[in-house]
Amino acid sequence: MDLTTRLHLLNLVRLSASSESTCRAAERAERRARLRRKEAAAARRRCRSAVRTAPSRDLDDAVEALADAQREYEARAGQVEAAGLRWRRALVASERADARLGGELARTRKLTSAGQPRRKGARLAAEVSLLAELAAMPEDLIRAASALLVQSSGGKDSVVMLDRVVQWAKAAGCLDKVVVVHADIGQEAEWPGVRDLARRQAERYGLRFVVVKAPVGFLGMVEKRGLWPDAQNRLCTSTLKRDEAAKFFTQIVEELGLDEQALLVNCLGIRADESPLRRRKPELAIDHRASNGRRLVLTWHPVFHLTEREIWQEIVDNTLDYHPVYDTLIPRLSCTFCILASFDVLVRAVRLCWVWGLETPKTYVDLEDRIGHRFKNKFSLAEVVAEASRLEAAEGPITWRRGDAIRHHLGKEAADLYLQQLALAA
Ligand code: SF4
Image 1 (cartoon, rainbow, N blue to C red):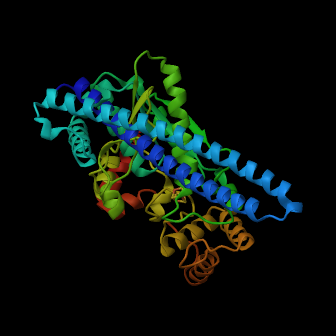
Image 2: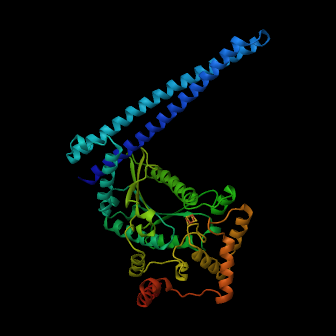
Image 3: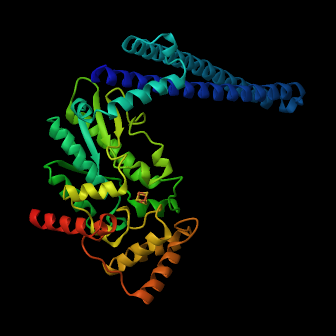
């Protein structure tokens, strides 16, 4: 099966899934409309009974109330009819989308009717196998893409992902399709120099660099909600990063000005060994929420199977620039204080802020105090700062050398080699 057919089938999978969810929503709306009609019928019954038993002085009011109840009932009945019609139409559209996908799958894969995605499970199976096939042919995927958006935090996984995508794109002769997108979540929440580093990493390959930014940054969002986000409610990622990236999807599709549906490949630098949750993610997936008739958006994780050690090895092998935060053995270049970080990492982050003369710990502790909500369930940032003060008094400020992250992960020789190569490249 060629790539165009696979992409065509994936779009049919998307249509089938989307029409099924429209159908489910229409069914729920119809059920709600029936419930409201039932309530209106009960109100009308009560009004009728009131008319029958009302003393003559209250009769006019009771009759008027009954007329209102009758009008309300008729309006509700009309809504039930309209909702029922929408549901039946959605059902037909969903069945057609399923049948079309089933027919195309059967035709292209010579399946029997048993392979038709009448059930969600069969459609998912088709989606999973098509995506796995595509993930195994990165150059072809890049060739087929209308644009490749590399979401870069400037961190170690992002820079390796970018380098990989660039190598594949060069081999496919499509480097001009790559755009690096950096989500700025507010300078006061990020380590200094993150945005400039992400820009330099993109400029190394002569790529377009775009910064997306929500109107309200991380701290503004916390202040407004009066709550810190947590692992279950990662509003910081969804609101400040994903939603802003989705706005750029619209912009790039307009810029492309294609007559047919655009294929956007959205690259994220997440890895399976980061967490059990991430391990369950597929390497390549349809972004159902962001896809529509004008664009099919695929989310791709080009460094999904790399270990942390392999990431550092690629950084050394390709002399990739990384942020000095890693040399202090803070494992992720996330927000200065990430809601997912452990106590020890946060303590180290506070101490690094003090070395660099940053106000961030005070800003966060003041905010925590103001909103009366602990930074994490298990501990507050005030406790983190207290522990950092204790360690600072006992040990003095933290120290590090350039290359310590590589020394830690790969040993002294690799660090020396990296620093030599870096000096030569300067
Ligand atoms: S780095 Fe952590 S705190 Fe910052 S946006 Fe991501 S999950 Fe939220």
